[in-house]
Amino acid sequence: MKKVTAILLLFTCAFSSAQIPQEITYNGIKRSFIYYTPSSWSESEPMPLLIVLHGLTQVGKGIMDFSGFNDIAEDNNFVVCYPDGLNRTWNANMNVSISQADDIGFIEEITLIMQKKLNTNPSKQYLCGISNGAFMSHKLACESSQCFAGIATIAGTMSDTVFKNCNPTHTNNILHIHGTADAIVNYNGSSTTGVSVDQLMKKWRSYLNCDLNPQKEDMPNPNRLDLSYPERYTYTNCKNGTLEHIKIVGGGHQWPGIIGLLGGVGTINMDFYSPQLIWDFLKDKSCNQTSSIDELKVNNTKSIIKITDLLGRKVNINLNVPLIYFYDDGSVERKFQLN
Image (tube, rainbow, N blue to C red):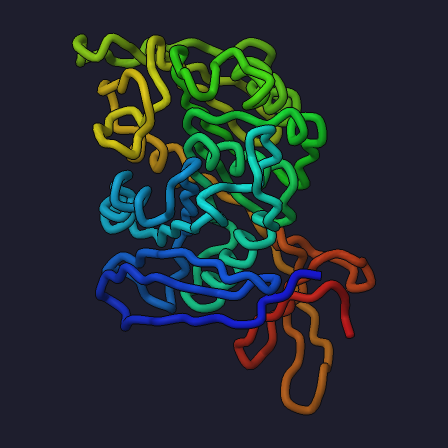
């Protein structure tokens, strides 16, 4: 059973941006993350939450300093969080992974902490990841009971295990960016890293119930010196979300638009700035949550005023599934069933 035994949280007043390291003990293991709140943050106005997952051998602070998402969060009014994988890796069921950590539960716990302490909007939670963090993002989209309204991934697909067992419980919006010359996570798939980009797209196209063939768009190619160029493939008429793929022809294992040591290896496409493009894709996506209002007396001090599942949907309280209880004293609690 998942259990958080200690939480160390520091807070700032509204209207001042803050970059705050955190540490929790989750399932008996110390875990850490860092988050950024923009200067426009106010507890009375729920903000979106973006969780950015680093690659193998990296840490959250490194990807925070490298990606520039804090500046985008400041300009676009959202909270951004950078968790640390145990031993600098995520348990995404990859053949080369050595982690057995409950990373799904850990990231789900972060979302609940952010909802409770920063009033982030549970219907506007997003994931972004590169390489190992991209694999973990797809695993969360396939297996998490939490609602992530969209994921954007770079240079990482699904492990064979996640691909085989993928069974999402909610609609989703997927953007995947990948270079055809990626020497770490092969565009065409491999026995060590998982399925090809084509297989990944077919998996999501089938689940999202999109048209068979995507529409191709030649994106601007202003930088002819980077020896690569981007193509956008948009799947149309999706019934359960949206699906896009940006194919970097000649691109390596890199963040497009960013030059730096944390990016990876190979050719860096400089035709667009991928963090801003990612946020532009995610920002309007929503889980479209609904709430059920029930006045149920718990004790003499407070009543349950709302019961939902982790996707915000109306539920019967006798279901043995994770539920969120909202009380009239303002507290929030996650349980598996009504006591």
